Amino acid sequence: MITLCKESSKKPTFVRLRIKETRVMSEKIERLKTLIIGSGPAGYTAAIYAARADLKPVMYTGMEPGGQLTTTTEVDNFPGYPEGIDGPTMMVQLQQQAERFGTEVRIGMITAVNFSDEIGGIHKLTVDGTKEIEAETVIISTGATAKYLGLPSEERLKGGGVSACAVCDGFFYKGQEVAIVGGGDTAAEEASYLANICSKVTMLIRKDHMRASKAMQHRVESLSNIDIRYNTEVDEIIGEQVVEGLRMINNQTQEKEEIPITGFFVAIGHKPNTEIFKGQLDMDETGYVLTPGKSTKTNKPGVFASGDVQDKDYRQAVTAAGTGCMAALDAERYLAAVETPEEVA
Image 1: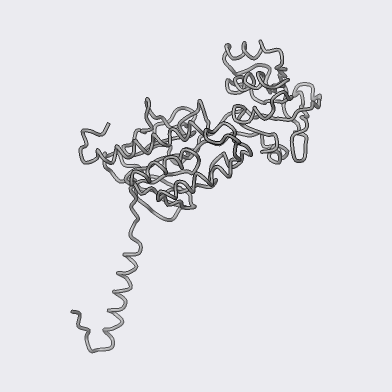
Image 2: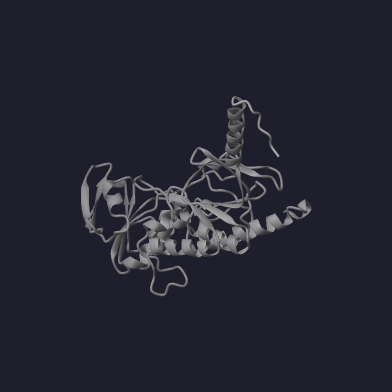
């Protein structure tokens, strides 16, 4: 029982103390069992499995909820959709499925991290530069961003014939004439893929040689329907709603030429979205998070990576979803073994 002093001057002091106590309680840092960073196929699949395992996952979507698939008009190669599905609809359905099992999806961006080095340690993160949260496990699914040329026409025609994934979208241009820009292994591989389904592939390389390996160069050069243009850059992609043609320029002679195409593919690389993890997670020379063997484990206990953020070879929605499943299972096993540290690999 609390007894107040009769003097009126004492009452405000009591009130102020209660307000201060309430404020401290309301500012208590939230602790999560599983935090998922990123909301593409990897993140949502991780969320589905984590929620079903009662890990009570909370997902922060990032600046591009749904990831790269939200810019894809048609997805024809994801199992379970015999008629195909558009990317944005697929991501909405994945979110609904994750939420049905109890995932809490939050709009926001993780802007800073401080991962623990200890098994069973608590990871500290900052949301939108202000809010601090803690997590026992973290699943990173921030993906990778395709590099584009930066042309206004390229931006305008994304989804209308401009693509950064020939394996994903090449089928829609079967028997048609297309162009691809890039001179590395990825460009050579995608040009070869397109050559098998398209009537003609014009390959633009801004230098006088390819950066691709000799084996990939020989493969491209052996295909008669690939027209390789060295010292050539894109001047303009022609078309208002869909790609209708390409104007290219020789950077040695400044001569311009227009060709009719219906598809334009960019293969100049991807940039993994790993900037905030640098200095804490082991990465390769291009910034992809390293996960040894058939695992999603990083070098920090309780931190896992899935999807394009750690996969620079396949970069497909279905493989991203597969590693999202793996990350959730790895997180579940980690949490189950934390009380017995010697069992945590």
